[in-house]
Structures are given as C-alpha cells and as structure tokens.
Amino acid sequence: MKQLRTLTELLNYAREVGPMKISVACAEDAEVLEAVEAARTEGVANAFLVGDADKIKSVAASLSIDLGNFEIVDDKNGASSASLTAVELVSSGQAHILMKGMVPTANFLRAVLNKEKGLRSGSLISHVYVHEIENYDRIFFISDPAFNMYPDLQGKVSIVENVVKLAHSFGVQTPKVAVLAAVEVVNPDMPPTLDAAVLTQMGRRGQIKGCLIDGPLALDNAVSPESAKHKGLVSDVAGCADILLVPNIESGNMLAKAIVYFARNKTAGLVLGAKSPIVLTSRADSAETKTLSIASAVALAAFQKK
Image (cartoon, rainbow, N blue to C red):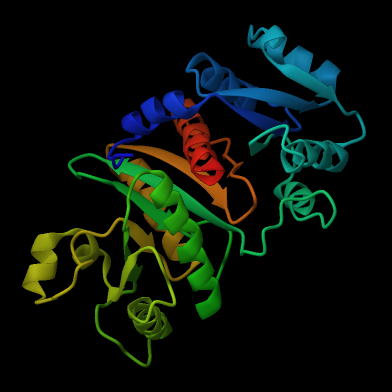
C-alpha cells in the first residue's frame, strides 16, 4: 500500500479495508455512541454495543440513533462485567477492535489484561497520538503521551516497537524515529539523552527492527530540516522524523495537546500492544477525532490480519 500522508487518506483507506467490527465496553455513553454511528455511516466499522441494554436504548433515543444497525449485548452486571464481555468478543474473534465506553479506565484495562479472556500479547501496553499538521507532508506519531509515565530503557524499546507496527499499517515502510530530549547532544546529567544514545545504537545493531532511529534530538531538529542543517546534524532521521518518542508522560501529553490546541490539525489516538487495537478516547476529543481513532484501529486491524 502507498504511504498515508493525511488522516483524510486514512479514512478513505479504512473504508477500503473495512468495515471492521468494534466491541464497545459499557456503550451507554453518548459521545461513544455518536462515534460508532459516525464510523458506521462512513462505512468504516460496525459494532457490538455491550452494557445495560435499557440505558443504551435510552441514550440512543436521545441522539436519534437507530439501534437496528447494531448488535446489543445486554450485560447489567456492572462495568467490570460488561468490559470483560466486550473483551471476550474480541479475544474470541467475533470483533476486531475494542473500544472503551462509560467505564473507568482501570476497570477497562483489568479486563484487557485478564489472563483467561483478555488481550495480552506479551508486549507493553502503550498509547499513541496520531497527528496531521498543516504544512507538513506526513503524519506524525507521538508516543507515549498517556499510559507509561516514566518508561525505562526496555519500556521505550517496547513503545517504539508498538508504534512502528502502527506506522507500517499506515504504509510507512521504514518509519524514522526521533528519540526526543531537550538537546541533541549526550549529557550524563540528562538521563533521556543517555537512553536516546542507547536506543540509537540498538537500532544500528538490529536490536530494534523495521525503522530508522536516532537521538537524542530536540524537537526542532527532529521535524525541521533547516534546524537540523543549522545544527550540523548528519542523520537520516533529523528534520524528517515520522515518530516522536517522548521521554516521559508530561512531555508527551503537553506536546500532543499543544498540537491539538495551537495548530491546525487532525488527530487520532490508539492503545497499542494488545492482541487487537484498542480505541480509548477522551470526552474532550472532538467527534472527528473519535471517528479517526476508529479508522486508525481499522487500518491496524487490517494490517494485523495479513
């Protein structure tokens, strides 16, 4: 497949490889129902709606959503039970994608990690934001801005491996990974620069596969060829990174949200590292972001089926 360079191209591609089946945990949530309805009308995905059927019907009626287009799985035994039911629909192969509804994240993740029915893959669970930013010729992947607070070196390896697979599903054959820090030189007093140097060497030795990785790189010389040239950086990654690996949750969260609020952009988000893609959106996310997040999951699910 050709490289997807915008999230509009992503949505079109998701239509081509979809529709996929989503299993929504605790679907009695207005924003989530709007998102799955949008995905259905776009031809991207259909859904199992798992949870209290009476509440799901009440919320759907308030939104004028026709539930005849969905399969309702009635589970009135609480959020934990409904989450596990939703997870089991995915682990059994009846659905391709899991989506979080009106359930606390901790309860939801316990179901995901359930030893008997869950979606454990042996990999670290991580989060990624996917951004299309005006005036750039490619999509950016920022990880991990939401789950892993202060990942150690092995954690960062796993985060890279997760997001590289997602980039591959977007047609980026050899994604360029910039390991971000405040500076582009190794400084023993700045631990993120030390991790970046080790990750770079691991990439060169073939211990991290499927990508080009370099760091430490400051944000400017990771995404701006002019900045990289001005700093005299000789690198296949500097100035043209696809993936931005952040050192910790604070920097990743602020970078991703700065893009959302300070730039003209389109955004999606996914949870990676499980056996199947997981859509976990925020109430603050726009309807477009939620639909694009589902489209991202569809692209990844199609890639994993190959």
